[in-house]
Length: 321
Image 1 (cartoon, helix red, strand yellow):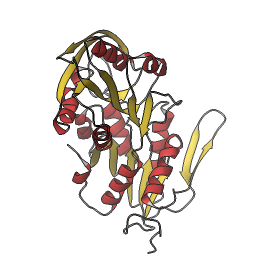
Image 2 (cartoon, rainbow, N blue to C red; image 1 turned 45 degrees about the vertical axis):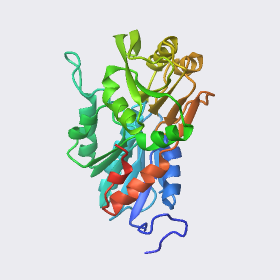
Image 3 (tube, rainbow, N blue to C red; image 1 turned 135 degrees about the horizontal axis):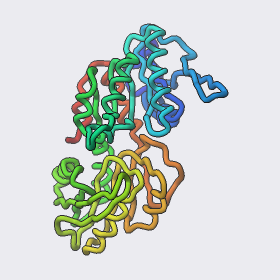
């Protein structure tokens, strides 16, 4: 089989095809370019009532089919991914791998109150019912979500992108901070690999997406603090944490968060906060640019992991911790 002349990967051939759904076409294009072959051709027919039907414009019979789609809102993004998986299965694809840089509904990983759904488990069940053979994702809100799937899950971490960036900054008196107690393990891993101390922000919520009290557990005076999180939604926690940290004598505070949901007044909160910068990845496209937001791409990482999955090679080298 012919190998593309600009491919980084000698094993790349016509038996592997990368497609993307509508909302992640920008990232699918970057991943396919990094891999060294054109993005597969697909389409979406839309009906006047809002119903839609996606499909493929080229054969996938006997192929390894990688479908790129982050399932952020609206829920049509998840439905399109499910339909693309079903279409590939019915078109006799050999293996169907869902590349989900950001998995929506992952915050619903348990029953935290009576009579509520466990959305993450339902999404896993839907993907498996549609016919997925494997899932590649990044920074699930809770690690245990991997156990909701009955197929292999490659759970990548944003640390692979963020740690080299932080190291390049050569920050003196570096201190890692978790914006809440739930992120303690993640922040601790960053602190260990960066040889830095760690503090924790304790917060209470008045209701979903609304932060009540927030205070810092630990000494931040004279430190350059990096807040670590998996997602930034309304940015209420990060903005309030940065202001409290600076009010406690820190020299500077910046934040890293893998998934930039950035809903509601998030942009205004970030720009009005004490944050020096917010560093995110492109698992979700920004709604607009901001002078305080820097985007690092995950395309090269996902392209490399796609190659290793295709050639049955270990991906352990793609994990910093």
